[in-house]
Image (cartoon, one colour):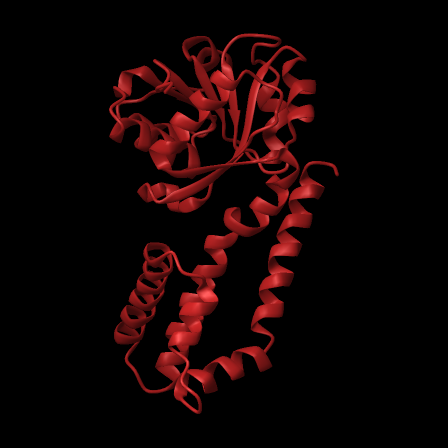
Length: 268
């Protein structure tokens, strides 16, 4: 199995870049083998506190790194790529929403080595899941090296690049849907007479426990739902209210809207 690169840099020093750098340090990489470029002095201070070398220069990071993570907002990608090596240099691992491999090659050159991916924010605690495009046309060794980096922040799955917009709509944006669910579940408990502290604890542990049960049991969520739904019981009443309120349809619409926005950001 191909291991981690000797040196890794990030273009951008936001939350996801920080998550990756922290994950690599946890995985055993020395902080001095890592670097990050960002125009924001505040973000450079945060990343610099990890022992990572920081700079304003994207080119400097690219020159010092075997693998470079493109971790900027889609609107910043073209400007950020302007000073990066073209048609060679480091392996580029993109986590930029909507930016296709073809679009990245237009910016970085037809000969650039590129792997495209989409992580999510639970990567901040090493509990993320990242989808990697399995058909970006690169060397299989580059794909595996990129996956090795991403495993430092959680699980990794490989999908066709055509599926990455849907991945963005589901798991990329998905944590926000779950946070909203926890927020609403907490508020619902308060409305029924619980203290805010108790309601929040119950909501958090219920979501965490249910997710662990679904993951560790290996059983289909529908089967687990049926097991806790007694005829004429409280759960059935609650589920009926959710369906009447359009819960499932609202989730379908959320994932579709986020998927479509990812396509728009990529000019599709």
